Image 1 (tube, rainbow, N blue to C red):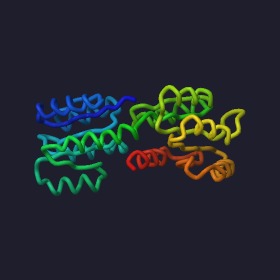
Image 2 (cartoon, rainbow, N blue to C red):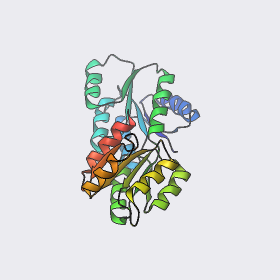
Image 3 (cartoon, rainbow, N blue to C red):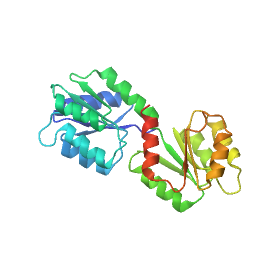
Length: 241
């Protein structure tokens, strides 16, 4: 599983030290030295999380966080500060920042929080036998999550489960030639802990199938057509629980 973190601070020594520590904990760390650089980095690739200072010349950390949130609303951001910037911090918390940590940083809390995110933000597997819908939904998810996998059949999905151990499976309930119950059972037998989200354009079939399954097997159900924002909200809530 690729775990990527963007470290942002105008103190280059601090960034170099944090990136080194996080690499020792298994994170791919990228450096940025201003709010403007952070926004540019976010536009170029997906990250699991951002660790960013509040007080920086030009665009401060809270302003950069607000800009990031407008384009990557599900990207977890941790702010750090050595100053009593109460108004800035309060605004960031209202806007949904994951946490605010004091400087000097409690490294144990940083790595613990990132490790939780890294586990929750494992690969997302989308399963659908409609190639166009599969590509569209995967592309939408890839804007917010660093690793989105695709499977055009149940067989491909089971192979991905073995090879990549995804944290989330998002699956069309009605795959060609297969019974919905059999599809869910195959997924859960191979990966009992995977977070499963089911969707379908057949509302009655969706409700009948989900209601007949053990209550903990299906995290959520979505009726097609559904707004992508609803799916992103479900994933965001699940990843931060």
